Image 1 (cartoon, one colour):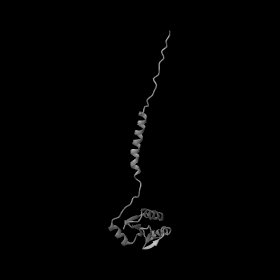
Image 2 (cartoon, one colour):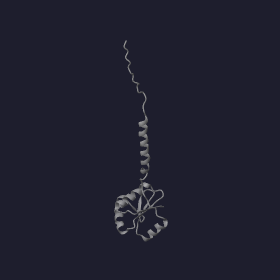
Image 3 (cartoon, rainbow, N blue to C red):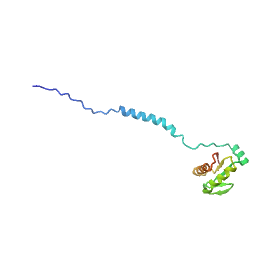
Image 4 (cartoon, rainbow, N blue to C red):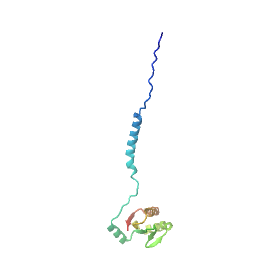
Length: 133
């Protein structure tokens, strides 16, 4: 009797996770490098000291806008509506080249202050100081 021996292949029944682990480690390293770069967004504000603000107000070369708790804007204690504010800032920026001083009520919303800053930049005023009252 002729017997033929067949070689039986051993079935592969285990998953090799080494390449998967390598991919996860590479992704982890990429995230660790990129994550600190994502925190760089935000506003960069230069907050002046009280002495500097008082001197600038005395010189009267800056535009002063008060922001109330309700989000209303005032120039020289006169209420100004938002659509007119850009026009007034453009006109005043030609005469007063010292920039803009925002005096915000301590309970004023950040949205109202940021909106005023955006309007000032649209009007061509790029030197902006912020004081909380």
